[in-house]
Image (tube, rainbow, N blue to C red; front, side, top):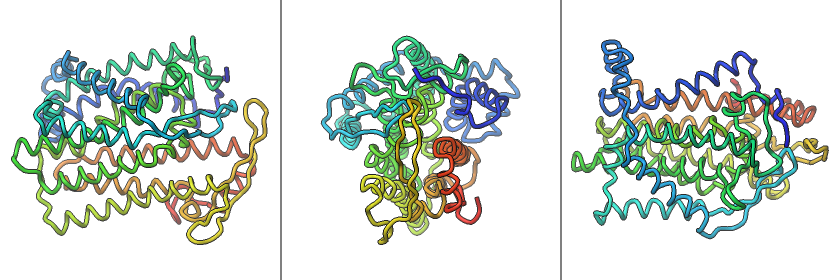
Length: 437
C-alpha cells in the first residue's frame, strides 16, 4: 500500500478540514434546495429564502422529497444499463498514465458507442411511447434524494473496499477517517478485473446523465408547451455538443487529474453521481418553466460562440494528447513544439521521463483550456438571460472548481518535477488567463 502524504492537501490543515466538513454537510441539502427553487419556487432564491424564513427547519424537512421505489427503479435501470454497456460494448484497448506506484491502468475505450446507444435508446423509448422522459422530470426531487443517500452508501462501500480489498498498490490510508472518506482510499478501484469504478461514476453515470437530463428538460418543455423555445434549443444543443466532445475525447480524460491523481472518494464519486446530474444540468432545469424567446440572430450568436469555445477546449486537449502520442515529435500550430524534458521519481524509486509542452495553447498559460470551458458554460446558461441569479450558479461553481484544480495541479507538479517545473513556470508564467493570472 502507498500511504497518502500530507503534501497531497495543498491548503492549510484548517482550510482543508473546514472545506471537507462543509462540503460533506452542505452539498446534499444544497442539491435539494436548488431543485426546489428551480421547479417549485419559480427559480427565485428570494422565494425559497422567504419560505425557509417563515417555516424554519420543519419547512426544509417538508420540502425534501423522500426516496421512493420509483426513483430507485429509474436509477437502478439506468445504472445497470450503463454498466452493461461499459462491460459489453467493443472498443480499443487504451493505457492510462503510469501511476505514482508504477502501475499502468488498462481501459476499453467504448465511450462514444455507449453514448450513442444511450441517447438513441432514450429517444426511441419516448418516440414509441414505451417510457416518457417527463416522468424523470416530474420525480426529479425524489431521484436526487435517492441519489444523495444511495451515493453516500456507495462512498462508504469504497472506503471499506479501500481498507479490505484494494484493487492495486495505488491505495492507502492517511490515518484520518474524514480525509480517507472525502478524498478516497484507492486511485483505480475496480470490481473484478475489468469494471473500473471511476470510469463508471465519472463518465458512464455522471457525464452520461448530463446528456440524458438535457434531453429530458427539452422533451418536458415540448410536452408542456407544444414547442421548444429557442433558448432551450441553444442550451440543449451546447450541452450535448460538450458531452459529445467529452466522450469523443474520453480516453484523454483518463489522463487528467480526476482519474490519474484524485482518488475515489466522496469528492470525486459522490460529486459525479449527484452533483453532476443536479448542478451541471441546472440551467436546463430552470429553462423548462422559464422559456425565453431570444430571436434568431441572438440565438445563433450564442450558439456559434458556445460551439467555438467547446472546440477550443477540445483542441487544447487534443494538442497535448497528440504531443504525448508522438513523443514531442509532431507539429504544434505548424511548427516544431517547444518543450521541456523532465524526469521524476515514482514512489517505488524508479526514474521516469516526461515531456512538458510550452508552445501552442499550452504556451499561453499552464491551464488555458479552462478559459474556453468556463466561457462555454456561460454561453449555455446565458439563454436564461438575467431575471434570476440561480441559473448562473454552475458557471460560478465551475470557475471556483477549475481555479482550485489549477492550483492543486500546479502544486502536485511542483512536487513531482522539482526544478523542471520551475523552468516550465518561467517559460509559461501565467496559470490560467494569459497576461492576467
